[in-house]
Length: 168
Image (cartoon, rainbow, N blue to C red; front, side, top):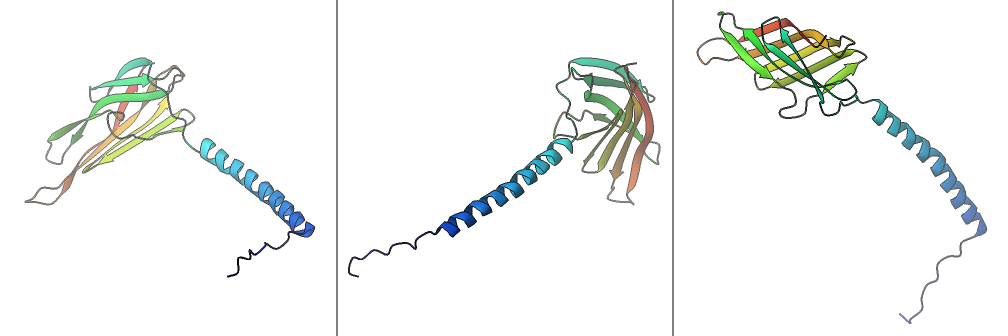
């Protein structure tokens, strides 16, 4: 070590041209790919409803109230009801359903159609409905409760095709 410092290799004009060309190709490849990714992420997801500002009331064909919350654009933001499942023995199990009271539940929208499903430990709830076009909702609810007794075979208590309406 005699104190000499190594000088970097000199950058030639050809090196600079290659670097500029690589930079241009990188921009041409990166920006369109980023735009496509942003479009897929933004357009490919369901439109989330805003906070409920209007409440419509209705009922199920089981005689239970069905409360519907609409946002300022008239989209379903929330609902609240009870569904009653019947077991093979005839025993009934009533379960409340408010998909906004805990973990987020996805509202799948397709035109005027709305589908919502929620699962927990031993139960499944589902809603399949259509907008009435006048701020209302009409459709069917399902509930399946999986019962696993300790002394006999497991069975399901079910409510399928429970009709409901809210609004007009």
